[in-house]
Image 1 (tube, one colour):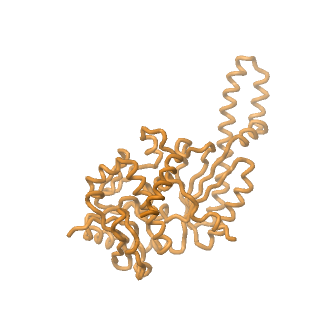
Image 2 (spheres, chains in turn orange, purple):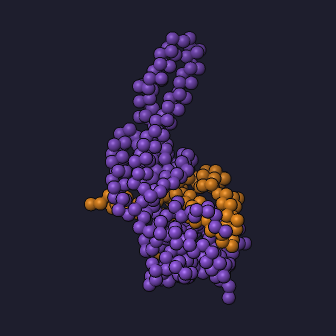
Image 3 (cartoon, helix red, strand yellow):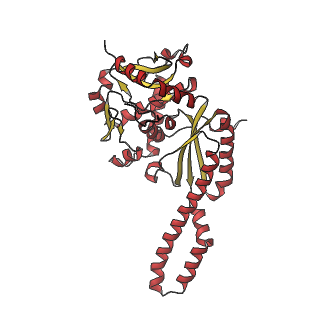
Length: 84
Length: 272
């Protein structure tokens, strides 16, 4: 058996996905500015200010916004996506 | 008619040719993916509605954590499928163009850079590694065996009761610092072993416990880009590290393969 089979496509925490897709990937100058949790994601001049999900978590009033709570929501999301 | 376009990523035209991407659902759950060719490169996009993705709509939507989570998750899912099919330069969440004209301008202006980047990413995979440590074992070890700590303990035992109290507090801090040092030494050693197998590596932010929701300390968070044929060796080393470190409270968590999110920045860090 290959080691790959043990690791490939294991469950990824939603928080990890958010941290990555909000922060990484090519920052290309699109035409639209969006703002998440009061932090501008400025694609127009590409000053990408969001530092990480940590900022999101800390700016949230709801303490339950941690990895565990997010994973519960991710399970719910996964069910929705499977159905669609 | 002007169409608002959501861009998922860029690939080589020759790889995208003949793939049935139109059967894949876009981020809005309605429109299928489209491949638009620009020279040697292709942009993978889908049309989205103004009601959900215009600047004004996003201003509102991005304040709703649920919407952000759902869409960011979908964005990731789509990119995961894309990267299984073609060499992909992944876009950030919500990379949008007002119309095909503005997309074309962007694609044409940077064709050479996309080509160089795609050549670099071809045949490679991104894997992410997080290293956790349950520090109890390490703390005991430091407290009982570290020479500096032993020396301090010896000194404290000679002091008056009041001084002993103060100094023990300080000693706890020293132990804590020493544990953190030992943790860093350990993860740096592992990182350098894995780095040797890689084309490129990237540090990610180490999260605090509020974020991880775990008992253990997160000591390392990193991304690794490597040739497909090196992946097996890398994962074997991770497995060995997990077996050897388990007793001392170490836990190595690997996820992947990811779209190469951390290795897709252009030499000029910004694309204008």
